Amino acid sequence: MAWRKMRAAGASAAAVLMMAGCAGEGAKDNQEPRQPLKVVGQFELHSLDPSTSGGFFTRLQVAETLVDADPQSVLQPGLATSWDTSPDGLTWGFRLRPGAHFHDGTPVTASSVAAALDTARGKAGTPLSEVPVRAITADGQAVKVALARPFAPLAAVLAHTSTQILAPSSYTADRKVAEIVGSGPYRIKRLEQPANIELAAFEQWQGKKPAITEVKYQAVGRSESRALMAESGQSDVTFGMDPTSLQRLKQAGKVDIADVTLPRTILLKVNAGHEILGDVRVRRALSMALDRESMATALLRDPEMAATQLFPPSLPQWHQKSTTALTHDPSGARELLARAGWSPGRDGTLERNGRKFTVTLRTFPDRPELPILATAIQAKLKELGIALQVKIGNSSEIPAGHQDGSLELGLYARNYALVPDALVTLADDFGPDGADYGAMGWNSPALTSTLNTMASGTDTDGAAEGRRQVTEILQSELPVIPVAWYRQSAVVSQRVDGLVLDPLERSWRLTDLTWTK
Image 1 (cartoon, rainbow, N blue to C red):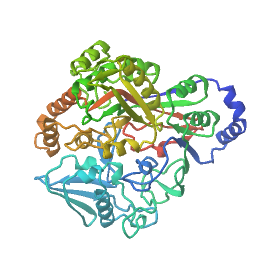
Image 2 (image 1 turned 90 degrees about the vertical axis):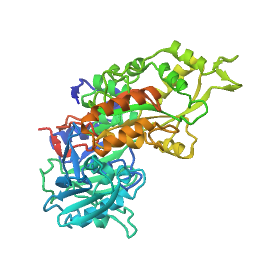
Image 3 (image 1 turned 30 degrees about the horizontal axis):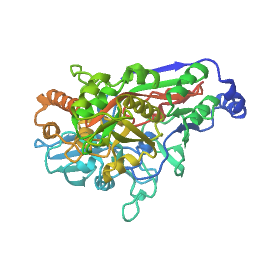
Image 4 (image 1 turned 135 degrees about the vertical axis):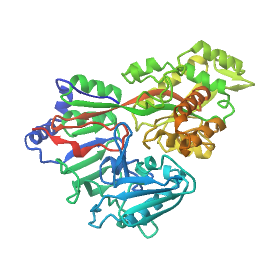
């Protein structure tokens, strides 16, 4: 993991003229930094439920999970100060932090934690719902989890944002989440879905008190608008910059840039049950068509992010240096397509048995680099005679297309360490039934067996070989096609010091920030 902080000199005259009044406010705030910290990002909040809210409230440090993790994915105490497991691996105990309180003033009890976790494991598609849990109970100031069979990554699962612990007052009688009452260093002062959240420091927080006591988060859809807000001083911390705007800000704005390489990969999800895409030769040809290095250089402005395999170097246990790299090989792609029965038609589009090679790729603009990458992929496939239609819509259309079977190709970014142990995400994404952001119409009994053995914890000595086998199967079969690795950046005003991005994307670490003196 590496992060960098860079400063650019000068300011965009156009932006200053457009936002002069706002810039003046920023200068005043720099002298008297009593205004709330202003955080701007691309994501809107459409749900309060931890299983679907995208980790908003752990990133804002409103809610806690039982287990936390450091930037290297090493598990750390969260609401639980320690944990242990029985010799047979079937019973786990998590001891709670003494004296912890929720934001409504009620104490954090083992029974309230057990109830929150029971609600979380009832949410389909979440990591905890896939764990073989028999029961979650309170035992004094500890929470006991009984398993039907050993599951070694349980503690890592309880660090996932979908398992955040909310107060009993957060829920309606039927366990719907009506409000967010957490136990973190910040409490919610005002929330207006989908775009605005205001926070205040929680007076009963037991840890280090935040230096910045008020925070405002605002969702802003357009990357260009976020860039102008960052440059003009309307935002103190700004996420979700497109590569072009970020490059301009580096060169022309008086701002700092923090970045970190994430364990995330931009990839093409392939419907392997499709009559065209089900042929592994076709999937390999699609991969060979991609000029990853050129796309990373020209579009992401970062040639190091060209993906040669699914797992980036920021996942050192899973990244395999010995794996044959994915490369740009147009002639090899044409040869594979010909062997699969595809030949150019009169208009240059590939045909087979009277059918043209036409497929649709779905993506979304929430991550601004995705649409421009989709256009580049479209151009490269056209060179092979593949007619790719690009549809830019809502991010929900990819899982919806998976569920109803209509998805052909999807382009998105997948973080393999949202659960600090990547094994958990992989077991879900590439299990026999696939997953919304994993395989579709594809499974490998060998891969499933390897993942299950690793999850049982019975062969710890064989874990490295298991990871190698998983990588080789995915590299060969390509149920998802890696396009680029990912470096996340944030634009930081000079009013603020101390931002270090979390590669696991669990927290924005706002409690580490201070006003510039």
